[in-house]
Image (cartoon, rainbow, N blue to C red):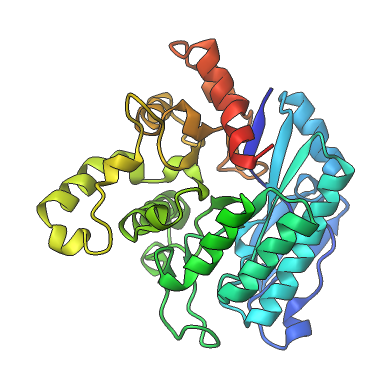
Length: 345
């Protein structure tokens, strides 16, 4: 079996939200033909996509070709729209979540679902998370690494995942036994990275490390010990910089350990237990994957491909299967057992 926790989907048809809500910045879909479309933001092409983004039949054909048993479906992160007015974002989320739930309902053996919530308003987010799990039957939700500034909610400042207001969402997820998949978006320093695709190559790994450190140092895992969280792209830059992070915690506790006195490595794998949170396997390098297994334990590393986008793994699970020093048991754990536990299947 292969269960892929990191794949993205959109509806084939999508309303013009700029026109509907009376202000700009939302994604608009422009179809070029039956098999391709453009994701537009105002007059700019954000991304060109093919029908495997919206067509479940096409997805299943490609899953069969690469021996993927099941995909966890989540929206494309640009759709989060945390910058938008909360009620407008809630309406957008409900459309996306209803669509994902419909695809899962029609193909329950091939797809699981992760919804999206308007994190700029934590009460609305908690309500939609509850609807996703209890009414739509989704496994949980996908969220971003931080919440964009929004004047209608908490002022002009960005909120990282340690922000106290988000405790409402964490508690709701824990009470519902819902999975939380954290995916980077709106990368830090993007204004300084206009060339070479650096926001995706450098900004995304940094964003994910920031999110992990925020949750660790902010004591989120202490307050919500049953919260089930996975981070995209192998945890980004975090596994490779844990030594620096741990050292900083020890030498400058006055700056680092101000909200949580638990050492960062206590959240990682030891001889007796796996890590406290999950990551996907999308690192494109055998040694990097071996590092993930050492840092988090195989029980916390799940197959993730970023299907169907270019930075993903074209043949999901190929990297895992190629590592000869992994046992059959470890490969099974990475290919489907960890995903099954994370998604609550």
